[in-house]
Length: 156
Image (cartoon, rainbow, N blue to C red; front, side, top):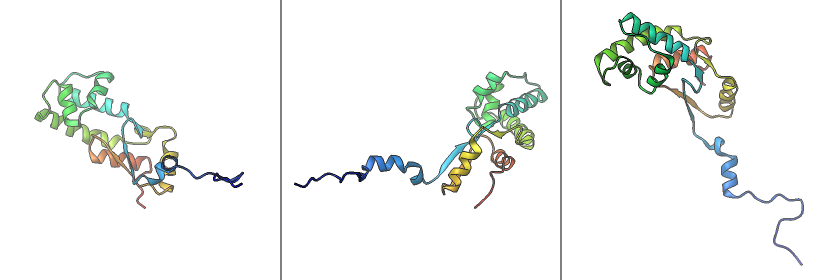
């Protein structure tokens, strides 16, 4: 008699779940990356500029640990946090603007370079047709400067 199973040596069809796993990234519409701590290592750049702004405006400097804790906020509220003010306070806005003006100019491959292996991953995704974007709780000029410094500002 005959059997209902696949012939010897044939490949059985994939289940829907197996197809989904195999094509997950190919079916993704886009990949959105966070800049700091995901794409690039920029802790020293931000930490040094933060302390320069604080010192310039007469506030005490902070530790790298305090800097990292404050990074969960947008730049103005990070400065409010560092100087002991409530979120939304005007001093944070001024300090944040001073910071943005200072540190965006200092972005380079040396100060905000890609983590090892990221360039290859980013280019592989791009060659596979996946649009990519970058975001940050820092200002947009900073994001654009980081992308340009790492030669990632190409538009297809």
